[in-house]
Image 1 (tube, helix red, strand yellow):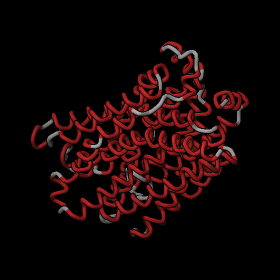
Image 2 (tube, rainbow, N blue to C red):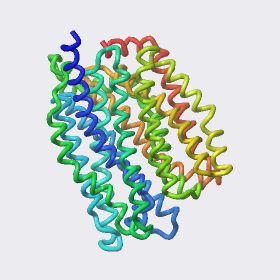
Image 3 (cartoon, rainbow, N blue to C red):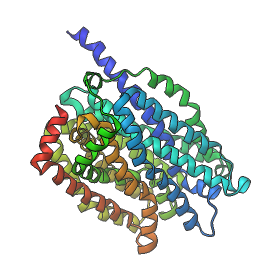
Image 4 (cartoon, rainbow, N blue to C red):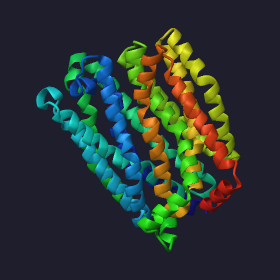
Length: 433
């Protein structure tokens, strides 16, 4: 029996690595824009003030998220019709084009207004692709997982994002310790984008070897585009509650990862090296808590985890960040960011699999992707810009935590919406069956 089980376990592990490797690449490329925002601002968005330049950069970063709902509907319906494997290859191809475009666009000083225009196009392509990537990967993992381990398996979708952040932070640390500030500003920030472009062919080969999920193959009817739209419209309550469920995840994630280097350097006046080390530690912490709490949710249920950690976030986010900004230091920033990482990782470990369970199986990819994309487009994707604006308007360097507190309120309300209605519970059970 053990000998027979071993190949199956290895096969599942290999499938997890194949599907999340593509997610790793997409998220690596996607997050680089936020990590190197200050350099990108100087290269493509020169303005009369540092605030205006940074805001233009973060608005361009956020513009990519506005494409996510469109990508969720167009590419998500494609995945639900033709299969998980083919759809995930298409999303990777689109993301690769956007990444290569950003990596090789000359600066504003060289080609003028064409430079920020091309960067914006690259971001829009990345956003269109990412609109379904997370949903496609999450659904694939959910459908291949044993029924009593879905939380653990699906958590590796978010886990692969943390590996991407670790890789980006390590590369950033090496570059900032080996290159001069002027060299980093001139061309050093492009190196990670070049690396992302170079590994695209390798990830393509890995993802092409994916097998279609048995759950998809067993379905006798695959919905047409009109049927998908009708299903989404008739299940508007699930889309709304699912979107609010994701707000807590997406705002927290972009606050503690993408925004951290800029926050540490521009607001707390710490070194870029300190900020990157904190970001690296946050990613490692996330990578630990996501599968652990995903597995815990398999045992105790999704609802207790979601309720507990939204309440804990509401009570502690602002006090923690206020303590940090009262006397900024590397040590305080590390402690606070690790606490916020614990809140995010624990909540998201249960949330991602919960979302796959409440969406009807026939439109699982497009439904999941639409919920996720709307939350990211309307809330999470603009977290760096909102955080920058809140500090400017209030004069309070701890103000970004208010945005995270608001997101936690959305998550708390969504948890009651999803698990407090008999109809929602019935849909959850039907979708998971």
